[in-house]
Length: 247
Image (cartoon, one colour):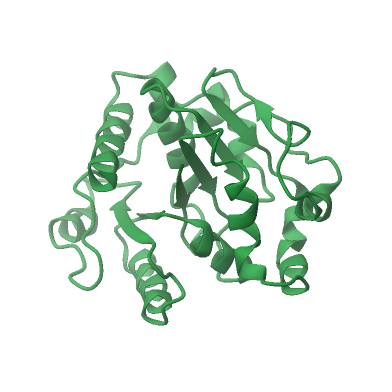
């Protein structure tokens, strides 16, 4: 089982849309996929038409030695399940701080699912916190959507500083540009000259497109309702490139 986390400390960069579309594309390969919506806002749960509610909340979930069907829900797609968001996730930092070996808690939960899924995709909240460190500890890949703007690149540099402190351990960092508007000189310039420090940005990028915004109306991956669109083709290219890095 490979755990891929869509993470950035900056909100609104395309973490959730990436998680949802990549989960769908992985399922088309025949892989069994679990999406864990860790963001209390529950956007990924909304896209998959699943109520953002966990029975007993995060406290009860963390008390379990393994995740059961009481928590995991099916979706409209046969190979995709979801562990929904819950508003109690906003207290996850507090619970982790008060537990033994807090960084290993998420990894322990995911380990109980290793025989059931080929991929787990974590849709992560935007923060630097104990939750973040637990995500790093549980992940094989940290997928970092980054808007080609100075402020977004600054947050990318902050993530690299975490790596310098060895908090990221052996996690593979895969940054890529998202919400790209090629009409803007700044966006084009940054894509043509990506940051030299740290891991190389993936060649694939995701455009700023109305088709992606329509996910909130369609409540489906863009690769379902607009498969021939530039946005859908970009997600397909991104998934192919990620798989090549995994291999």
